[in-house]
View (cartoon, rainbow, N blue to C red):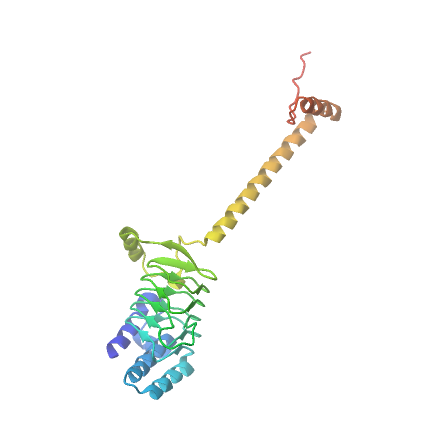
Length: 258
């Protein structure tokens, strides 16, 4: 238990650039306080001292605003950043090196006994306000975008966003996995190359509309230029001649030489 607490404190320096000293982390980080309280309450829960475990869990919730059931299993080097409003259910399992931001819920969707909360494998990052519900599995190094609602399994190295959550991409190859490791930790589960496909589609439609507007403007300028060089009668004659031949494009007649 004490080794877990030591790792929980040390890992903050890697994932929060605002962290300066161990003393600052121990005294001012509610996520660390919640994990310390959970380590103790979980130990009591495993020792079948259920009421004491719930008591320490409730005390931790009162002090930090983070609610972790003493039955939840939390691995090494887990970081809860900011933390207010985080809820972790009884049968939830959080693997090593996971990160949760404020407002995250690892909840159940059934009143039945047994496994009813999510399992997070190693290296998962869950953005602020995300809801991961039911006995599903979030694969290794997967990322859940802020405010997403996840009700189905998420593959390894994938990114899920939206309500309900959609999978943006899967990095299955070893090469891409190594690249992700080089890039490092992605705060709030946001990367530089991850755009919602719906947003991409909307942007494509907007680009198409902008191109049509530009084409219409160019056509108006051509018509205005023709109006300046020809009289209304000549334009009408030219247009009538083109229309009678089945063409609608107005072409200026060549001027006769004097």
